[in-house]
Image (cartoon, rainbow, N blue to C red; front, side):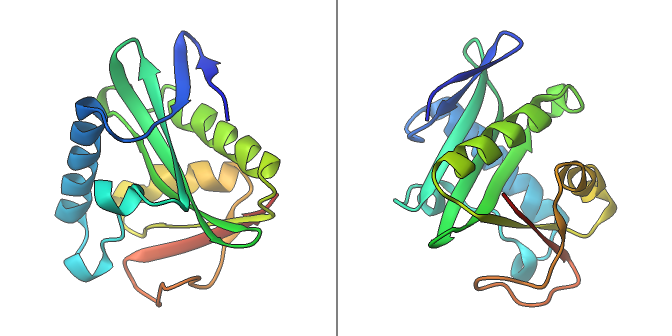
Length: 159
């Protein structure tokens, strides 16, 4: 799983040991907690991402973290997209699309046949839902340990 250039940026597998990615993810979890009731918050913190079944990518522009995303293996051939985020200053600049394309390619190389995700149902998450639809994700029932939740939208696609 190598690096991929994104207009001067690079996508790298990240071991989550750096302080910049820790701060970036802390901001992500804080924002999700401000938007979603505690029982509906599914964003993983650093410890939740530092497990063998998760591969985590950072998008770097020089020394700055400008995006991230992860893939969690659920079972043989099925994975969950997690922790997709673009820095506030860089939203709508193509980073999320390039990162999602990269993750889907890497998942296919790893033998993943299906990717599912959970995102929010609020207006704040509409751009994310539109991005996922653009990449072929369709609505689905809750998967894995998820349960029906009015604050969540579940999506899936085959590779």
